[in-house]
Image (tube, rainbow, N blue to C red; front, side, top):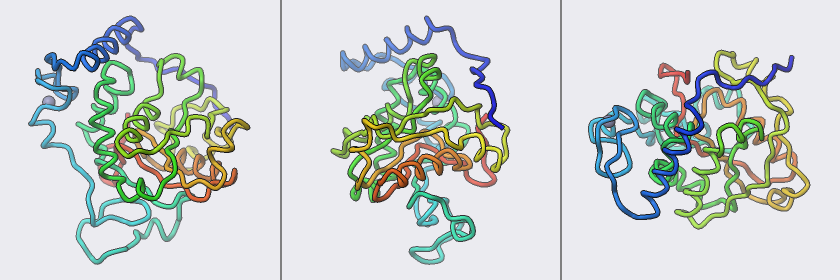
Length: 265
Ligand SMILES: [Zn+2]
């Protein structure tokens, strides 16, 4: 059953978000490192980014991990291994990689970027993603940000996935295929839904529009998103691109939920 689009209940006032975003942009334009607050603990830091204490709490994902899903293994049992989950329920995409585990500090970074007051974090987050997705980027033709529905993008002013994609593209000499994928259905937030319900929620939510077809047909694409949770949204996106003629679809996210870790709130 399709659910009604519900705007988020708690959002900072528009003026505040705009002012903060402007401050971030001005810092970048001027190239001056004005004191900023650590987006996680709100300590003063010299450059845009995390303080040393919060940085050390981030959990970067490195091998050994499932070559398909990118989920970390607790110990190294040989190269090229797949997780049980990847074998039992293979995703539509080829490979997924994430820079960090979705834990408290990662969640605060995502939140700070997403709700607009810390656009200056995107280059740092994009750099970590470019490192995590190095092998994927070497093979790819273009990056495809997971799109927001126009109403949500209007409310939020920008799409955080597109912003991350722009930064990764700049660092890897790849293009961003902005028209490849369109969100045609405003879906309810996935939070609080189980895996099956998440799948139903996003069914038919994406489409490759006529103007985006040339960016998709025969191309090796990487879907870009901020967080990978159950993978239901990214799976529908990948299937939509493959059906429209993409030759392959990989996935690169900033943070991924790892079993036993924290879930997005
Ligand atoms: Zn901090």
